[in-house]
Image (cartoon, rainbow, N blue to C red; front, side, top):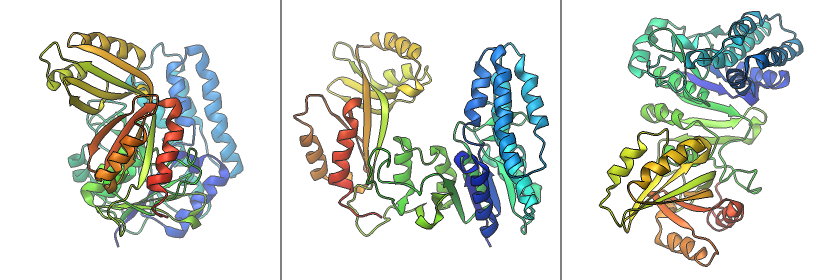
Length: 439
């Protein structure tokens, strides 16, 4: 029987009550592998520890310890936090926290949560085994905080672990180790990635992602109250949703599942009766082929336009300049001697924007539009000439410029003023998404 991987996010482990729910799920289903994130808020707390002055670190350590002790007490566990707390204290007086130190510190959240849940399962009589993630998720030596998994080494190493086919294993998400044995991280949100990587190398049948929502929706329910649950969607559709703002899945986790053809099931830890969303390898997940399956919204975007009329500047030259900066430009277009692209201000410091502006100004006249939102329509229906014409005409007379971009045959993106994004998303959802009953 092929294994199944269950991954539980931080909100699923945030309280003693939620940990009991997680236990009920794993005991009832007994998946081969269980991956857990840090308790909700702990990674942010540890990240703050790395950046604050030394005098403020002890207070953060006390907070870290208290939050875990409260859960341990409620679960009536015999469980010591001393080794992890002592490790934090060993960094408290350091003048500067290096990237290597930071990886060790941030990994403590998953180290504790996995050990805590392992202890709770044993208390309840479910004797799962602890599988140290640093022995499984083997990464390159290039980065401590965004390490790339070394799939070849991981596959070669997997059989040497001699894991029992009859047991369930729990492991930490988010972290791994490089060839020197040093702790590395897969990037924030990387616990999903851990689950997918383990699924790939173990040749799992499926990955289940347990979170605080019932699955993937046609739009963020906090923005569109009547957003609908999508029961089935393709890897490509989910990739675009994740890329353009949906926070349901860590985007990188899709790659291992796509390579191995492993379906993903997203559901809620707190209400498993409402089903969920299944993501798998198909281009046709419903009976109709011309749908707009969902909308995504990315706030705090910036539109760059470089007018190259007075100089013979190629797109390659623009891209060469961008390569020197920690920027991932989106939706690059070249039209009428103007090259445009979108950047996410949440990921680009103001100092980088200023310096990039100076460098690009050597190549042409640069215009930057701030305070934009990027709305993306996703689904095979967006290639329809009718939809493109309708969307373009719909906003033609608005008192602001609406920029339309084709990213692929399944996405159409609009860059609009941020303060009007909610209204525009609602209009598009009502006309193009809500009319197709996906739930």
